[in-house]
Image (tube, rainbow, N blue to C red; front, side, top):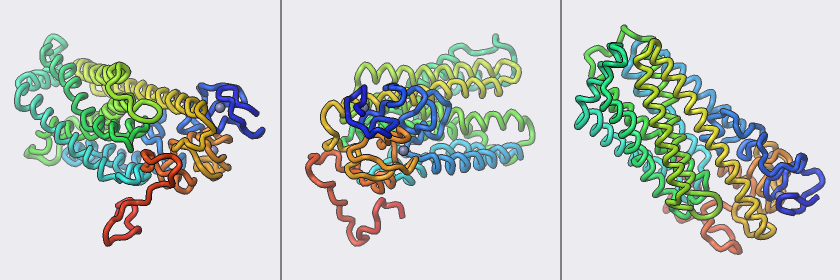
Amino acid sequence: MACPTCSSDNPEVASYCHRCGTSLLVGDAKRATSYAVQSAEGVTQFAVISTVMPHTSRHSADNYRWAMIISGALILAAAALGLLPIAIAAAAFLVPLAYLVYIDDVNLWEEAPAAVVVGLFVATGALAVLISMFFFQWVFDAQWASFASGSRARGGIEAMSFPALLIFAVLLPVVAEVAKNVFAVLLAARPQFDDMIDGLTFGVAAGTAYAAFETIVVFWPVFTAQDFRTTTGVASWMIVVANVMVVKSLIYGTATGIAVAAFSGKGEGYDGFTPTYFAYFGLAVAANVAYWLGVRLMAYLPFGNGLGLIWGFLILAALVVKIRMMLQVALLEAAVEEAAKGDGSDDKRSTYVETYCPECENLLLTNASFCIVCGTSVRSSSRQARSAMGMRPVGAATAPAAEPPAPPPPTGSTGPSSEGGAE
Ligand SMILES: [Zn+2]
Ligand SMILES: [Zn+2]
């Protein structure tokens, strides 16, 4: 049957068009109920793992979910015991380290293994330390002190320092967002990382790295305190740890992910500093400003820490849904444009032999961009899955389509067994 969107010919059994992903059963090109990255989920579903780790399959996403839940519980237990230095440090780095493991695990970029992302992590982290020292210790330390003591004393909203609120909830998020974007955008501009999913990945890595290093600077007094173990206010410390570990980290990551994904844009090549990029950059800043204004102001209310945590979750949910809507539109529209160009035999991101879908294990057609059974985009598959699926490696993107994939670069005495450099 011919697809109503792109006119490609599909087998009678197809539920989804193999070229553009249109749902053939309901004739729906937008697929609101079926996320192109993970077709079993809806587009507007609050599913964090499949959003920030689009290359996971349903099975591997479960492993990450459980690893995060168990680690998170242990960190909260450390906070409950009052072991704040351990709890804060582990909470700060849980999400970014899990993200590095994910990137290494799915081996996203054949020619540029996880070392590239470690570099991004360290460079953004160093910038985060500098900016955080500048704001919290070197220049605005007086405002920070007045602000922090004001909220803790619960002297009412009148005790709040308005300049401090502007500095730490508005000015700092603007400066920080530039720092989170700068190295991620540099990487996303490289020709081998031109996919929107690549941009999203760099943005999340940079944003979570920034969050971790900022947390360490802000909570530095905890690490230099006389007593290693705290016994007072443990309950509110647990909420602070939960906020730092999950909400702050993921808000920073997803917001920057949105901005850098917009820099990458859909299809081949990167879009660059377009008005769309600046609009999404503004959205990222707005999300951070809203988060910090809420957290700082709610600190004056009863149960302020808990309210701040809930407020952060709401913003995070909105950011997650925004990313999913962005990727959905980008994957489907890019596929329609590709389908309009030809039969897909020169599309470097589709399959080039018949193979199997990593999600549902049904047969994938040759030159397919989507599984005809479950509708999952083949572009969201991991590198191992891609090579098992007989796809052109992403690293061969710059080579003319008629040529075979480039051989791996010589790796010296280690030989071909060092593939991925993960040893
Ligand atoms: Zn189609
Ligand atoms: Zn499938």
